[in-house]
Length: 265
View 1 (cartoon, rainbow, N blue to C red):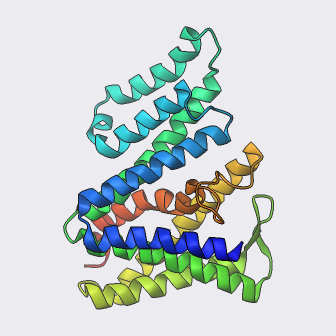
View 2: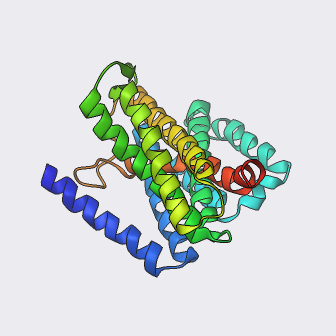
View 3: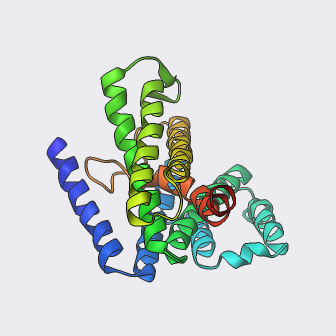
């Protein structure tokens, strides 16, 4: 099992690293889109939809619109269209497709697609290579520190009913790890802001990422599954691996565009 996890992680890491180092913003955007489409497919099937069913196809299209045509949602009619689809499909299908299914697929697609858009937008902005690496390092340091501190210190559980293995010590360790990693990387690669600015931003990203991980754990428990899928041998599903990224990325994008310049310059 450990060997399988290591092989999968190595291959996935090389793919991501290759796109980040050798590719451009478009290559990264395509990679993110493929990953989010796979993640939404898992989200849909986890909640009893068929991966080739009409509601899943609808969700995949909505994920694509969120990532590639986000300006659609700037128009006031966009919310009306989404709500109309959720309300009308059950009627037109004579309730073969329930309203709760349509609502769930819509929420999942917007949640995943918005995260995918933010991951692409971080890379596409000025100095995008730096901000994307800054975000990824914050999340990776958060996950790594949370894992090792949690195993070493143990202590009270964070939310036992949602994720029995996560501890308060691990959560705090993750926040500190992200803050330290973000500060070091920021000061070395782009010393425009002081270390505290980068550290605070990294800590906020860590909190959002951990919340995203808990949210996925909560709806996996609701769906009665351990993993979102089996696409990554030894690691579960794609959504299991990107849940913290897609939840934290929109906040990270906002912090980069508005938080850092206004608060710490």
